[in-house]
Length: 293
Image (cartoon, rainbow, N blue to C red; front, side, top):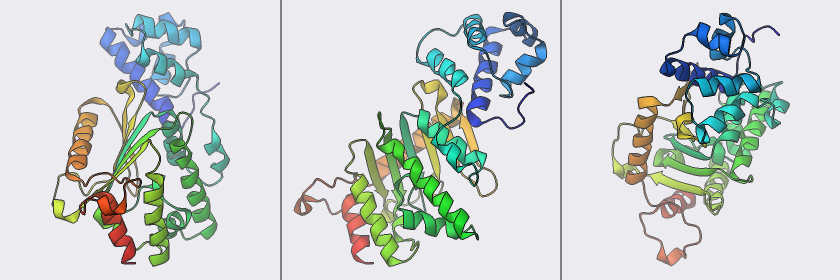
Protein backbone atom coordinates (compact mmCIF):
# COMPACT_ATOMS: atom_id res chain seq x y z
CA UNK A 1 0.00 0.00 0.00
CA UNK A 2 1.50 3.39 -1.00
CA UNK A 3 2.10 6.03 1.71
CA UNK A 4 -0.98 8.11 2.50
CA UNK A 5 -0.82 11.75 1.42
CA UNK A 6 -3.02 13.22 4.17
CA UNK A 7 -2.45 11.50 7.52
CA UNK A 8 -4.85 12.25 10.34
CA UNK A 9 -3.79 14.11 13.47
CA UNK A 10 -3.71 10.78 15.34
CA UNK A 11 -1.38 9.30 12.75
CA UNK A 12 0.84 12.39 12.75
CA UNK A 13 0.98 12.40 16.54
CA UNK A 14 1.90 8.72 16.74
CA UNK A 15 4.68 9.25 14.22
CA UNK A 16 6.00 12.26 16.11
CA UNK A 17 6.05 10.29 19.37
CA UNK A 18 7.94 7.41 17.75
CA UNK A 19 10.51 9.81 16.30
CA UNK A 20 10.97 11.47 19.70
CA UNK A 21 11.49 8.08 21.36
CA UNK A 22 13.92 6.92 18.68
CA UNK A 23 16.06 10.04 18.97
CA UNK A 24 16.00 9.83 22.75
CA UNK A 25 17.21 6.23 22.49
CA UNK A 26 20.08 7.32 20.24
CA UNK A 27 19.06 5.09 17.33
CA UNK A 28 19.37 6.05 13.68
CA UNK A 29 16.64 5.52 11.12
CA UNK A 30 18.64 2.66 9.61
CA UNK A 31 18.93 0.93 12.99
CA UNK A 32 15.21 1.34 13.62
CA UNK A 33 14.41 -0.06 10.17
CA UNK A 34 16.39 -3.22 10.92
CA UNK A 35 14.25 -3.83 13.99
CA UNK A 36 11.17 -4.26 11.82
CA UNK A 37 13.02 -5.67 8.81
CA UNK A 38 12.16 -2.74 6.59
CA UNK A 39 13.84 -0.13 4.42
CA UNK A 40 15.04 3.15 5.94
CA UNK A 41 12.35 5.02 4.03
CA UNK A 42 9.65 3.09 5.88
CA UNK A 43 10.77 4.56 9.21
CA UNK A 44 10.57 8.00 7.65
CA UNK A 45 7.03 7.29 6.45
CA UNK A 46 6.04 5.89 9.86
CA UNK A 47 7.35 8.97 11.66
CA UNK A 48 5.46 11.29 9.32
CA UNK A 49 2.24 9.31 9.81
CA UNK A 50 2.08 8.17 6.19
CA UNK A 51 2.17 4.43 6.87
CA UNK A 52 1.09 2.21 9.76
CA UNK A 53 3.17 -0.06 11.96
CA UNK A 54 2.25 -3.76 12.33
CA UNK A 55 1.50 -4.81 15.91
CA UNK A 56 4.66 -6.93 16.30
CA UNK A 57 6.77 -4.17 14.77
CA UNK A 58 5.27 -1.60 17.14
CA UNK A 59 6.18 -3.75 20.14
CA UNK A 60 9.76 -4.14 18.89
CA UNK A 61 10.17 -0.42 18.28
CA UNK A 62 8.80 0.59 21.67
CA UNK A 63 10.98 -1.96 23.48
CA UNK A 64 14.10 -0.93 21.57
CA UNK A 65 13.34 2.73 22.22
CA UNK A 66 13.27 2.10 25.97
CA UNK A 67 9.58 2.86 26.41
CA UNK A 68 8.54 1.18 29.63
CA UNK A 69 5.12 -0.40 30.03
CA UNK A 70 2.42 1.83 31.43
CA UNK A 71 -0.26 4.27 30.29
CA UNK A 72 1.99 5.87 27.67
CA UNK A 73 3.11 2.51 26.24
CA UNK A 74 -0.48 1.23 26.11
CA UNK A 75 -1.78 4.47 24.56
CA UNK A 76 0.78 4.34 21.76
CA UNK A 77 -0.18 0.75 20.99
CA UNK A 78 -3.85 1.71 20.95
CA UNK A 79 -3.21 4.68 18.67
CA UNK A 80 -1.25 2.47 16.28
CA UNK A 81 -4.07 -0.03 15.89
CA UNK A 82 -7.12 2.23 15.91
CA UNK A 83 -8.90 2.19 12.59
CA UNK A 84 -9.68 5.89 12.63
CA UNK A 85 -13.28 5.03 11.86
CA UNK A 86 -16.09 6.37 14.01
CA UNK A 87 -19.41 8.15 13.91
CA UNK A 88 -17.68 11.17 12.33
CA UNK A 89 -17.26 9.22 9.11
CA UNK A 90 -20.94 9.76 8.35
CA UNK A 91 -20.18 13.47 7.94
CA UNK A 92 -17.26 13.08 5.53
CA UNK A 93 -19.45 14.37 2.69
CA UNK A 94 -19.37 17.84 4.27
CA UNK A 95 -16.96 17.99 7.19
CA UNK A 96 -13.27 18.44 6.43
CA UNK A 97 -10.44 16.31 7.87
CA UNK A 98 -9.40 18.89 10.50
CA UNK A 99 -12.86 18.82 12.10
CA UNK A 100 -12.96 15.03 11.94
CA UNK A 101 -9.54 15.00 13.65
CA UNK A 102 -11.13 16.92 16.51
CA UNK A 103 -13.93 14.39 16.89
CA UNK A 104 -11.44 11.52 16.91
CA UNK A 105 -9.24 13.32 19.44
CA UNK A 106 -12.23 13.99 21.69
CA UNK A 107 -13.22 10.32 21.53
CA UNK A 108 -9.81 9.38 23.01
CA UNK A 109 -9.61 12.14 25.64
CA UNK A 110 -10.28 11.75 29.35
CA UNK A 111 -10.37 15.47 30.21
CA UNK A 112 -11.30 18.57 28.19
CA UNK A 113 -10.44 22.08 29.39
CA UNK A 114 -11.54 24.98 27.23
CA UNK A 115 -11.54 28.76 27.29
CA UNK A 116 -13.81 30.82 25.03
CA UNK A 117 -13.73 34.64 25.00
CA UNK A 118 -16.57 35.52 22.58
CA UNK A 119 -18.77 32.49 21.92
CA UNK A 120 -20.31 29.66 23.91
CA UNK A 121 -18.06 26.59 23.45
CA UNK A 122 -19.23 24.21 20.73
CA UNK A 123 -19.49 21.38 23.26
CA UNK A 124 -22.25 23.33 25.05
CA UNK A 125 -24.11 24.89 22.11
CA UNK A 126 -27.75 24.35 21.23
CA UNK A 127 -28.67 23.50 17.65
CA UNK A 128 -30.13 26.97 17.01
CA UNK A 129 -27.06 28.71 18.43
CA UNK A 130 -24.64 26.48 16.48
CA UNK A 131 -26.57 27.04 13.26
CA UNK A 132 -26.55 30.82 13.80
CA UNK A 133 -22.79 30.82 14.42
CA UNK A 134 -22.09 28.73 11.33
CA UNK A 135 -24.42 30.69 9.05
CA UNK A 136 -22.28 33.76 9.72
CA UNK A 137 -19.41 32.16 7.76
CA UNK A 138 -21.14 29.50 5.62
CA UNK A 139 -23.33 30.76 2.77
CA UNK A 140 -24.84 27.33 1.99
CA UNK A 141 -27.67 26.65 4.49
CA UNK A 142 -27.43 22.89 3.94
CA UNK A 143 -23.71 22.85 4.76
CA UNK A 144 -24.28 25.06 7.81
CA UNK A 145 -26.95 22.65 9.02
CA UNK A 146 -24.63 19.65 8.54
CA UNK A 147 -21.87 21.41 10.44
CA UNK A 148 -24.32 22.16 13.25
CA UNK A 149 -25.41 18.50 13.36
CA UNK A 150 -21.77 17.46 13.50
CA UNK A 151 -21.07 19.91 16.32
CA UNK A 152 -23.92 18.55 18.40
CA UNK A 153 -22.89 14.96 17.68
CA UNK A 154 -19.50 15.74 19.22
CA UNK A 155 -21.29 16.54 22.48
CA UNK A 156 -21.97 12.84 23.05
CA UNK A 157 -18.60 12.56 24.85
CA UNK A 158 -20.20 14.45 27.75
CA UNK A 159 -22.69 11.63 28.34
CA UNK A 160 -20.72 8.64 27.08
CA UNK A 161 -19.45 5.68 29.07
CA UNK A 162 -17.07 6.75 30.36
CA UNK A 163 -17.99 10.42 30.06
CA UNK A 164 -15.21 12.91 29.53
CA UNK A 165 -14.48 15.37 32.34
CA UNK A 166 -15.28 18.83 30.94
CA UNK A 167 -14.27 22.22 32.36
CA UNK A 168 -15.10 25.45 30.52
CA UNK A 169 -14.14 29.02 31.38
CA UNK A 170 -16.35 31.35 29.32
CA UNK A 171 -15.78 35.09 29.20
CA UNK A 172 -18.79 37.20 30.15
CA UNK A 173 -18.61 38.77 26.67
CA UNK A 174 -19.85 35.47 25.22
CA UNK A 175 -23.03 35.76 27.30
CA UNK A 176 -23.76 39.20 25.86
CA UNK A 177 -22.93 38.43 22.21
CA UNK A 178 -26.38 38.22 20.57
CA UNK A 179 -25.99 35.14 18.40
CA UNK A 180 -29.25 34.38 16.58
CA UNK A 181 -31.31 36.88 18.55
CA UNK A 182 -32.77 37.04 22.10
CA UNK A 183 -34.83 33.83 21.93
CA UNK A 184 -31.85 31.78 20.70
CA UNK A 185 -29.61 33.31 23.36
CA UNK A 186 -32.11 32.65 26.13
CA UNK A 187 -32.34 28.96 25.21
CA UNK A 188 -28.56 28.83 24.96
CA UNK A 189 -28.06 30.25 28.45
CA UNK A 190 -30.62 27.80 29.80
CA UNK A 191 -28.60 25.05 28.15
CA UNK A 192 -25.49 26.19 30.05
CA UNK A 193 -27.36 25.79 33.30
CA UNK A 194 -28.89 22.44 32.34
CA UNK A 195 -25.64 20.81 31.16
CA UNK A 196 -23.95 21.93 34.38
CA UNK A 197 -26.12 19.39 36.18
CA UNK A 198 -23.94 16.66 34.73
CA UNK A 199 -21.44 15.55 37.39
CA UNK A 200 -18.57 15.66 34.90
CA UNK A 201 -19.24 19.21 33.66
CA UNK A 202 -17.85 22.37 35.26
CA UNK A 203 -18.80 25.79 33.82
CA UNK A 204 -17.30 29.07 35.02
CA UNK A 205 -17.80 32.63 33.80
CA UNK A 206 -14.87 35.05 33.59
CA UNK A 207 -16.47 38.42 34.48
CA UNK A 208 -15.64 41.80 32.98
CA UNK A 209 -14.54 43.11 36.37
CA UNK A 210 -11.81 40.47 36.59
CA UNK A 211 -9.89 42.70 34.19
CA UNK A 212 -7.26 41.79 31.67
CA UNK A 213 -5.26 38.58 31.66
CA UNK A 214 -2.71 37.40 29.11
CA UNK A 215 -4.93 34.58 27.79
CA UNK A 216 -8.41 36.02 28.26
CA UNK A 217 -8.83 36.97 24.58
CA UNK A 218 -7.65 33.63 23.18
CA UNK A 219 -9.75 30.56 22.48
CA UNK A 220 -8.08 27.21 23.18
CA UNK A 221 -8.84 23.63 24.21
CA UNK A 222 -6.59 21.30 26.20
CA UNK A 223 -7.24 17.61 25.50
CA UNK A 224 -6.11 15.41 28.38
CA UNK A 225 -5.17 11.88 27.36
CA UNK A 226 -4.88 8.72 29.46
CA UNK A 227 -1.11 9.35 29.37
CA UNK A 228 -0.14 12.98 30.13
CA UNK A 229 2.65 12.74 27.54
CA UNK A 230 -0.07 12.65 24.86
CA UNK A 231 -1.98 15.75 25.97
CA UNK A 232 -2.77 18.16 23.13
CA UNK A 233 -3.62 21.87 22.86
CA UNK A 234 -5.92 22.95 20.04
CA UNK A 235 -5.91 26.53 18.72
CA UNK A 236 -8.57 27.47 16.19
CA UNK A 237 -7.74 30.02 13.49
CA UNK A 238 -9.79 31.17 10.49
CA UNK A 239 -7.29 29.83 7.94
CA UNK A 240 -5.50 26.97 9.68
CA UNK A 241 -6.03 25.45 13.10
CA UNK A 242 -3.08 24.23 15.15
CA UNK A 243 -2.43 21.17 17.31
CA UNK A 244 0.32 21.71 19.89
CA UNK A 245 1.84 18.50 21.18
CA UNK A 246 3.24 18.57 24.71
CA UNK A 247 6.38 20.24 25.94
CA UNK A 248 6.69 23.78 27.24
CA UNK A 249 3.78 25.02 25.12
CA UNK A 250 1.34 22.61 26.72
CA UNK A 251 2.60 23.51 30.19
CA UNK A 252 2.12 27.19 29.40
CA UNK A 253 -1.50 26.68 28.32
CA UNK A 254 -2.22 24.48 31.34
CA UNK A 255 -0.96 27.28 33.61
CA UNK A 256 -3.00 29.87 31.69
CA UNK A 257 -6.15 27.80 32.12
CA UNK A 258 -5.47 27.34 35.82
CA UNK A 259 -5.09 31.10 36.23
CA UNK A 260 -8.25 31.78 34.22
CA UNK A 261 -10.24 29.41 36.43
CA UNK A 262 -8.85 31.14 39.54
CA UNK A 263 -9.94 34.56 38.26
CA UNK A 264 -13.35 33.33 37.08
CA UNK A 265 -16.47 33.25 39.21
CA UNK A 266 -17.41 30.15 41.19
CA UNK A 267 -18.79 27.34 38.96
CA UNK A 268 -22.43 27.02 37.99
CA UNK A 269 -24.27 24.90 40.55
CA UNK A 270 -27.90 24.47 39.43
CA UNK A 271 -28.71 22.43 42.55
CA UNK A 272 -28.10 25.35 44.89
CA UNK A 273 -31.23 27.10 46.14
CA UNK A 274 -31.72 30.51 44.46
CA UNK A 275 -31.78 32.39 47.78
CA UNK A 276 -28.38 30.98 48.73
CA UNK A 277 -26.63 32.06 45.51
CA UNK A 278 -23.58 34.23 45.88
CA UNK A 279 -24.35 37.30 43.77
CA UNK A 280 -20.93 36.89 42.18
CA UNK A 281 -21.11 33.25 41.17
CA UNK A 282 -21.36 32.06 37.57
CA UNK A 283 -24.98 30.92 37.84
CA UNK A 284 -26.21 34.27 39.09
CA UNK A 285 -24.44 36.11 36.30
CA UNK A 286 -25.87 33.79 33.63
CA UNK A 287 -29.36 34.22 35.10
CA UNK A 288 -28.96 38.00 35.20
CA UNK A 289 -27.99 38.14 31.52
CA UNK A 290 -30.77 35.72 30.61
CA UNK A 291 -33.44 37.81 32.30
CA UNK A 292 -32.33 40.92 30.40
CA UNK A 293 -33.02 39.26 27.03
